[in-house]
Length: 158
Image (cartoon, rainbow, N blue to C red; front, side, top):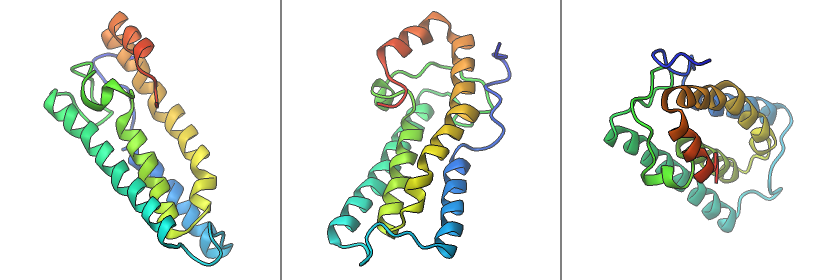
């Protein structure tokens, strides 16, 4: 059972998982290039990637701001003070992680690297097992039936 007073027990900032995935992709790309388009990113690809990158960062920022407005900590090693159900949290239980996922994909597309896309499932599995499940257990312990109801109404991702 999660300790409500200690938080979910996540010991590192979750964005590091995305950074780690991109670092592994960079190493792979430097040794075994794997491009999305052999001729380089064209205008359509660049625009799509930029939209995902900027949109993802904006979506993540809206999640951060909503936590701030509701006076609950963003850092996942601190206990939640409020079950946030407004703003982007009406559509997804994890807008910050969804935004990071979009930004990660957008950067991959802009850079024309396929490796980060290939590694994305691993990044999301690590995020889910090392972070999201701990956060969900903490929220369930802290908010009980209210959190269960929220989970029935709002999906984890979209």
